[in-house]
Image 1: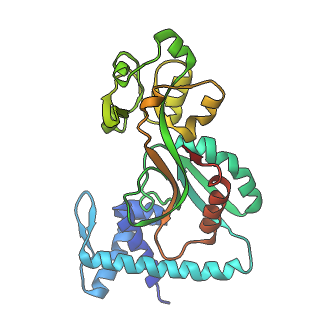
Image 2 (image 1 turned 90 degrees about the vertical axis):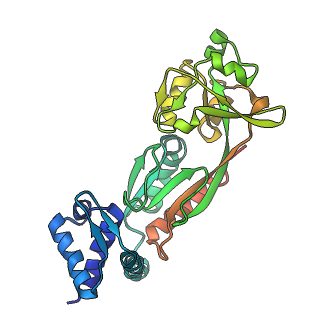
Length: 301
């Protein structure tokens, strides 16, 4: 029996994870077994596909070409099975979805009950983190991301747009006063993320010109949901997306600060997926569902 498709899958996992041991864990194989598979491919083809070192592996030009062709072939095999299964059953299988904590808590999780009713045979594997994940390396099928998309290897569908705003709780402003000019922020506690040091400055429009104002504070956090709660508790001022805080403002639990100086920067909210030619039916129906449910509501200027 021809086992080349299995060999291709092993090679794909090595490239995407960057090591034989990580690929072995994904495939339930030992690292040495995976290494032997790749060596067998190289011997058959008569070319070096991977450069090995004690710390990692890197792909040769021939390896890159073989990887791209292998991804296409495995995708075609998956699609052939999915096309047949689609005529006999509803979408099924594990679907791995990643989103930020704020978006996951406020937008993704609330719409999942109806999705579960529509597609009970899809097993959802949801991970929420504000750190940007690598779809291939972390075996994520679909991610929801804010801001510009720099990776051309992925496709995206727009879910909506949201501007960012500087906000504080009424209790904080009553105690410390409300800034009248962006320079006044130097006298206030401002929250920042601990994984984006380039964001130590906030943009504003001053005299019709965009300026970046340095902010200071004694608290950093790795996710927007924690920052939102710290702000609600009256501990300082934050800059967050309206998709995250619009309801707080409407309920009076948060007040927009320096609205006349807002830079007006808008973030796109996209559902992102691999650019491989085919996708499982479970991914397609999830993306369509997210667009159906959220696109009409995610226009938060």
